[in-house]
Image (cartoon, rainbow, N blue to C red; front, side, top):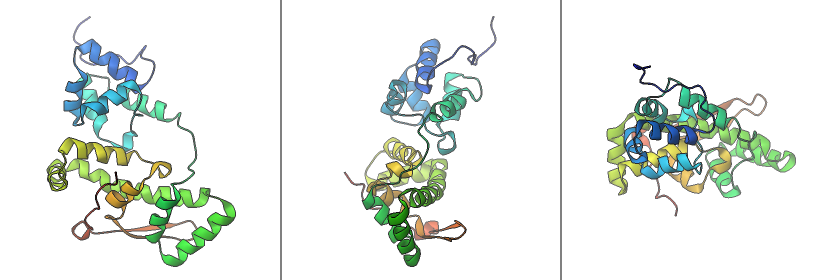
Length: 225
């Protein structure tokens, strides 16, 4: 039968990496060509295929539409595969390392930060970790918009002395970070330049995050090595 350009999602089991590997073979294209199509370094695709990189959350990336087009997949096929695979992630948030937690609390309203620390000492990590996860998601929403401005991203890469693809990959990695995985470098590079302050109403759990206007953002610190 001829005339179909998209793959049939039936009988395709396994991970996103399995799907990409199989489809590249079917259409006789390379991982390097796919990397060019979705604007990432080749190691990003290699890691997806090998399983050493988990597929990013669909809401936090722009690669799946490009991947679907290049691989000529059925609409939603790779996104559904990613959702299923990520649905296997362990539930719950335990929170970041103590150093990262301390940095984020310096951005919190001082009295609220003291209350949160006292409550953490009495009740454990879960409550504060949940608030930090929500603060992180606000910052990720702001950072996600940089993917829609490739010229701005190229200028930022040149200013930092790195390549466009490496900086884009760094952004994609941050967008897929959880509070548990958050690093000092993430805070310095992405959160502190964007967040003026945050606060939470302890009785209701309502979170308020004040973002910096784009023109008033602090220059991000060099990424920790």
